[in-house]
Length: 202
Image 1 (cartoon, rainbow, N blue to C red):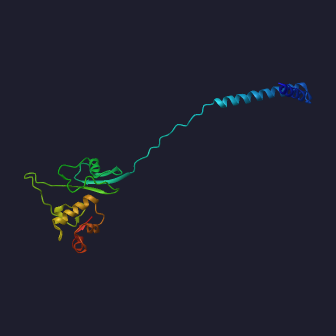
Image 2 (tube, one colour; image 1 turned 90 degrees about the vertical axis):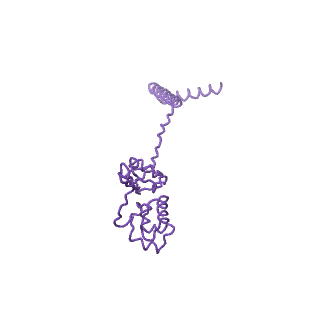
Image 3 (cartoon, rainbow, N blue to C red; image 1 turned 135 degrees about the vertical axis):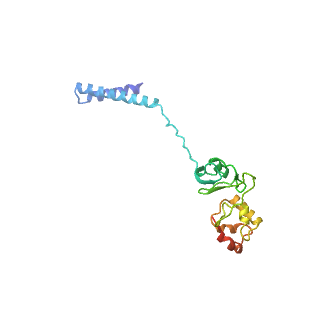
């Protein structure tokens, strides 16, 4: 209590010793009170101010896309945008599914697609009157990405066993990029490839 009394006496002594007029002292006192009130108000409002957390914006990750060309015996041939890791069967469905008479036996429907590849669906032509397959006459080099087992078998030095291996290799690994890839098939060495390379194409 004595400390408060002494502090008050010191402030009073300082106040009376100021070389200000009575009007100046009143103005100084009023200004001091306003500053103190404003400071108290800022402190009180600052402590009770609600901190707003900015809303979280979800980040959407777009799956990568690939483009494949679906042609042959499908209802809507064309180039389609597919999600990465799509399968051959998904590409055929995007093209309106296989058309009547399509031969899907030469295609690996479960194979994962790669960007820019072409899916060709073979068609089995039949004679409407007898229901027998019509043998087509091949002209020019044989397309190794579309040829059937029978067409490969017609090549010199390629029998039914190797022809089946070529089709199976294509089903598992996808389309051949060059005719040289035929040498990756078991049974086709350099000598046999030299015989047929002028008769095939991609």
